[in-house]
Length: 419
Image 1 (spheres, rainbow, N blue to C red):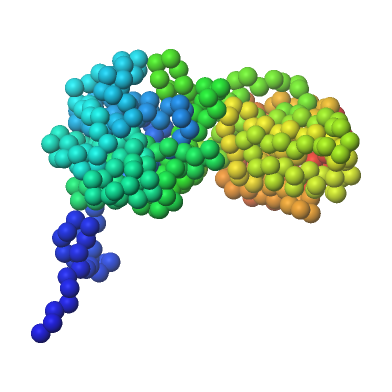
Image 2 (image 1 turned 180 degrees about the vertical axis):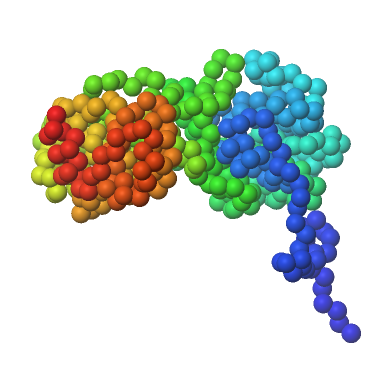
């Protein structure tokens, strides 16, 4: 009698089939890293057996972040293994000395062969494995060069099997292309459990750790760090830091309470509108979507009759942070009109709302958290969509004066024609 072939897993063992209702559930607690901003992004810590990919531009601080994370874990008595394929042990030691990282529970190895790395993990028995970087690894069973699509995919698959079969958390550092995407095959991001991007302008001191994929938590959270001589420092109150150098009483500047996951962050929206040469008007946006800027410019021209086609328009989100949510729309509109009319917005005012193509101001979510954060930092006036203001009960103003608006024309009249 012919038997059906056994179903097997990547570990070589036969797979078992469970009912969802009776399938065993993990009761492992998350591994708290000790770095609050990292734990926030990961949803409370690293899940045992998870493979986390961290990408970012060269020199942005990925290796520094990993070393500090390993130091925090080792300080709690957990043995960790750091495998580098890009530096020598001496170079890693020098960088660790600069960061004042020196712990006997941090084990170092300079290795590119994934089979050797698996052997090292078996010998050391770490509670976490970090590899810098995945693009430098190769497998002896694959004939192509390190960094090739096949090598990256095979090396990741080997480390993934190790993580899932032993509940060993694995952190992978990844290079990015000039377009900002993780270098290598797209399947790499599909294979891992979480993908984080470490962002920031190297001319700025701020660094943003942003999650774009997380099987075990939110994909909207960010962590904020400040680069110092001694390494990366957590920023517990990013709103105050981003607004620390905001000029007051200057046209073209307004404050937006943005939401990054569950965290409200106040950022400064800056706009500059100036006459351009005939036929060469520019539209430039830094930290925001240029297409959204073009759309809002067209809405202002159509709905309130301002002339912008012969003006250069520059938009900037101060501090190097990027804002992608629709709530930014009203901030852009107010900043543009402020610069165009050369009238400063009351420095104690914050604005928030989505702008539609008909010029209407639409409500956005989590308004209560935005109000609370703005009030905590001393702001007294909140310009918001009328539909959003109606949803607030009498106790939700947090001591602030709420100014409801319905259209962009009403925004112009309430903010600028009354001053």
